[in-house]
Length: 493
Image (tube, rainbow, N blue to C red; front, top):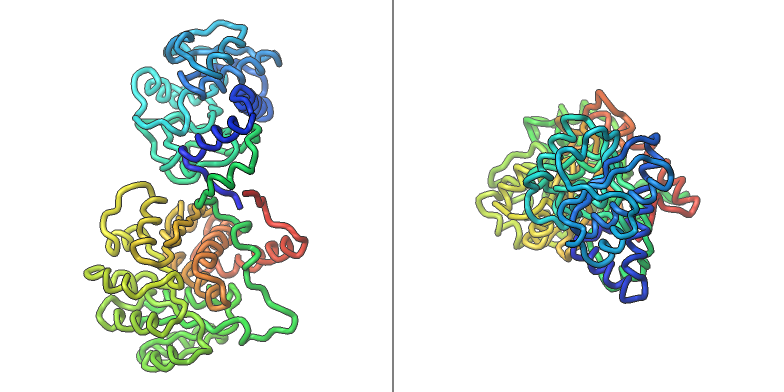
């Protein structure tokens, strides 16, 4: 699993490595080698301005400068502060730099073809100011390519927040493991391509750190992804139920299509009598029943998962049906109106939830249900999951899935084309279909979010929500092939 480390956890990983016998100078030398390697792979030789800060990031910059100069690149080093103020490994690496060290001024960019940003790392806690802030603005004005060390200076490693300003890097070279700020917006937009370099920290340190946040990807859930068996039949693959509305029928129809495409053996829409003809005129493989049968559906053990909310209304009837589905012990996906219906009394919902339930709010629904929660998007989702006692999928370009036990993933594969009406309904349907087949709510939410993004990426520009189900089979086929070959894409702890 591609775990993510907070800034504090990364500091601890460094410390554990050094306590285990890896010298700090060796870690820094390896980091500098990785940065220099990224420069050489991506750019033709040119004039490089290496901007060094007063901490370990600056030490990495000194190493990269020395190695590039050794390869014949014209390199200038500019330091924020005095060389005499450097400490530890950073001071050692500065002493190994054979060239001049100029002060960090606006002149640092004169004549440069490329900038190595080694000013501030992921632990920066205050906004950029002074010459650092001015240089970031000038880099953008001159359209200079940037290679960032650890994170682009100004991006907070835990939150992805931009503190004042940050350069937009072509590539960011980070070390050992990514941090949440590499994936959360707006920081992700500033990182460019992200290279994770092995600098000699033993993976065994993760056993002490025990990280609970990961980057979402197939390695997180592929071993649990349902797939048809040769001896199986449709009843083995679950029976999903979508509670449909009487006016906005498209939402439930999109969700039902998503559930069918992702493998649910049967899908039923329960809808008002006045709208049954609309649902029946749609996909012939969809079962349609009047919602007056909803209580009977809940009592039938053959129905394995229920989605409530898409186009369903926000009144007392919706609240009662949500409560009934939860009391019946069904695996539940609560989306859209099923969340907003409890905006004036969220405690009434939270008291009935368990980790078998999945809540899928977008930002507006999240605020209505949970009120103001401080912190990053990751922190807000994790807090909400604990408060609700259920799995929370906070939708967006940087979707976060959080479990009440503290686990969380950040999903970063969603293309901008997903910002279209109905895409969230399809996502809810994907999660419903997986849960109907027996996948737990957290794994189903993680898989649904990634598959949603991957299907959208296959389709590309011009995407509408109806296309997502059509893009899914090829994505699933690729995953099944990978699993059959005994691998998981990019899997590492």
